[in-house]
Image (cartoon, rainbow, N blue to C red; front, side, top):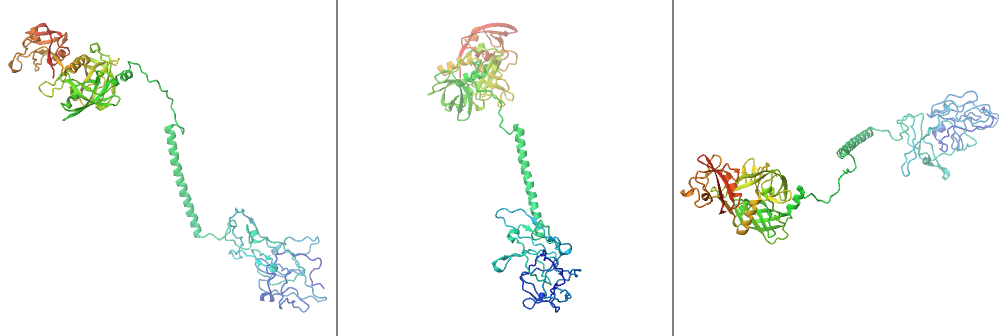
Length: 601
């Protein structure tokens, strides 16, 4: 007999299966109604005296909150009961045939036998939402599957798999509803669809629509606390500091690169056009050609005496080692000083004084044991004209092999120097060549050469702005007024010094009044010791010159002072004839005399 429910083909259950199918009956199960009564109005008891379900049975539908909804009758379904509260038993129909337990489908049978895929209303819960995540790299640990919430807002832990009977593993879902209060036996077990193991579903998250998730589904795992927020802020600050340092470093590098590009015009090496090397030859009359020809014959002298020392220049006269220089250059050596000669190539040799003369400010030294000397050719100073180009070579301030150039700016400049002794015996009288070639202290004794590299003078004095004129010059340096002893005079004196060790001076045999301020050179009234100012039997006495005469011209050149008369006379050799013009008692007279000779000092 039928139990009052619709008959026909049996339908399959498509509701959520129970997870407690194999759980033994408990006290709660004994108090629940089965929903099907026997003829006496009581439910048949299961094993152990309780009304329960067997291993192959399916449970009626239960809501996600655990409420039980019994299978509805053909007329209308009864109201749902709360979880744990037994539902009232249905009135038993008249028993006509043995009671047969039948399962009640959730929906009315479909005449087309189309199984329902979820029913309307609260009986069909939403299927779990599964979100794919990126497949982790090999060896990267995978977080546990997200189990949703427990219905009260708290995250439910994942449910581990428990072994089932028969040695097979039974995997439970991450979400498990509580056991229903009523069970309905089922005759034929429905095959269960295979379920993936936690290892297979570990990359998917599960969603419980009845739970209130505490965090976004895209961030599975425990909620973020205050420490996590602080950690994120600290990490953000570290990133900002690193970015600032990187920006500063990039700015510094960029500035350096920009400065380099601005200075060099690019990042590549700059190569400017340049002419190739030449053979090095120069015209013989150019300054470079003159210097190349004259430098090998120029030397630097270092003099050390007991009281003082000095540096000067000289040049080679012959291949025997004779060197001409100024007297004031070797004067510091005295009688037992040391003189060292350094040649243009750097070789050095000791030297000794051959002879010197303070009146001409000339001296000759000699080196021995030196070969390969380069004597300089001597020119003729009488051929020099104002404006001729000249080159001065020397060691100004001990800077050897220094070359300067200029022109002859004047001739026959009467120059006096020395006079430190006070008696006039050390005074030098020079009828000099004037040049604007820079000459400085240390150039003394060096050659002044013409365009053909021939010596035309010996550099001896400069005009300094702070110390007047003098052979030593001033320490202020050259101001473009240099003076050289004419080589004609130097040649004669050098020959005498090499031959005899002394030089002779031309004289006229008179004593001059050096305090006379008028124009010309005045012959004194009395000589030293009360003798006559005109030497008896001397050149002037023979020519008829008397005390008090004023000499105004020598060889046609005007004379303005006694020093100038001495310079003009010493410009000649002893024995030369000179024509003089003098005044006596307001009358102008002409006289001719032959120069005498006196030994120099």
